Structures are given as structure tokens and as C-alpha cells.
Image 1 (tube, rainbow, N blue to C red):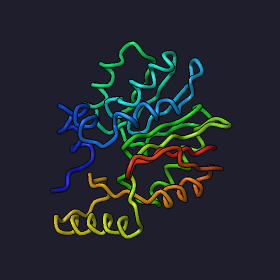
Image 2: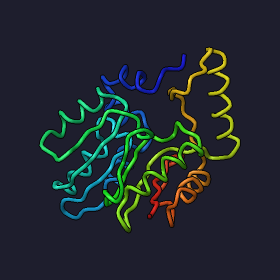
Image 3: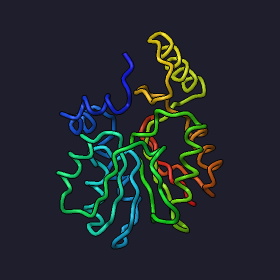
Length: 216
């Protein structure tokens, strides 16, 4: 049965970190790698979309202890776990959807998202990425680490399966339900460029997981 996104993560808070680090291929590599791609200058202000329990932020604060982070996540339970782990850091946490939360203008040196954005369509992402683009300072950038479909056919299959499941379960609202529908790297890149980013490059890959850098 499909679960609403917030409910899905709230129900899996216990053991979430262990699951991510042991069951997700190459997680022990891509979390530190992602952190290294973020600004190391003192007091850098970073936005984390779908920060969860802060696995990438634990790595980042080792490199930049004075960083200021704004994190957004649907799950209050996840945010509470993050706050407990990193209580001595400069973190502002917002419970809500990053599609709805205002991000402001020219606020952040960089933004990051890890294993969060593979649930949404290209059209939904373009709107989000345009808002993110405006929130970054001049020469700011976005680091995205996520897993992707490896072909157009795979991408279409995931989306078709979600539509079928919603129909079978009589779901007709516009809320987000937890079901993975990753884009291809090509379509993700197109979404970022259409949202206004000037350049997108692939920094590294681990199987179906890649780290992309999109520069304002």
C-alpha cells in the first residue's frame, strides 16, 4: 500500500540511519563525497533539501564546523533526531515540503540534497529548482546526490507503476506518496537547466547513484 511521504518516513525513524548506511549501495562513499563538494569557507550558509536525520550534514560539519545550515524535511521525527545529533551546530530546521517553504532570494552559498528528490516529475522539479536558483547567491551552486533511472524506459516504467498503484488504491488527491520514480541523469540535467542553472556536470557515480553539480 502506498503511504503518504511524511507518514512513510515517520514510521521508519527507528533504525533509519543504519538502514541508509548498510542497505543503500555506496552510501559510505557518497555521503562524505557530497560533503566535500560543499563550501569549506567559515560560516558558509547551506540549504539542505530533505535533510532527514542529517547524514550528509554530519560529514559536512566535520569539514566546516562553523557552517550555518537551513534544513527542510517533511518528517518532524527526522528533524528531531538531527537536532539531537547536531545540537551544538548552527542549524535552522523547518518541518514542511520544500515545494511549499519559501526559500528567499540570494541567501545561500550552496544547497544540497541527498537521496530525497527521486520521487518527483521533471515538471515538478523545474518549479522547485527555479525557486532554489533564486535562493542561491551569485556563483552559488547545488549539489545533488541521488539515484537515477538508467534509461528512458526505466523512468517511464516507474511513473506508470505509480499511476497504476494510485488508481488501484483509489488515490486521487495531489499529495506526495512514497514511491520511487527517479529521472534519468539527462532529464534531471534538463530540469536544472530549464530552471535557470547555467551549467550542470556529473561529479561522480556509483552504479545508479550520481552526484551532480548545478551552478547558478
